[in-house]
Image (cartoon, rainbow, N blue to C red; front, side):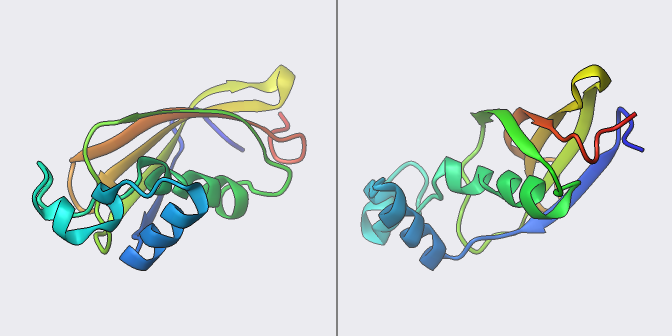
Length: 136
């Protein structure tokens, strides 16, 4: 049974090849993401990952790992606090924030940290509906 405060974690990383593929698929070919020389001279000192690529880990979590059967993604918000980089380990944390049993919905806090630290990179919330799993 799902309860407020329940925590799910998932460690992940993306390669530069995956960042480049996301740039092609999304059309966001900003040189901060794909041009090593350009990015080396930026305030970040190297290429950064697209914020939405990093945050796409939540699609994986809600679509294949956490109560996935029957999940319908209702909304997602993000605030990008720190840059994320290819080939670096991150930890996604999903916490049950609020439960709406009459609508079979759960509001989650969604966060990404540099793995093994309290350095928060991305924070937000997700609302999911699931008439198979969220039954009280």
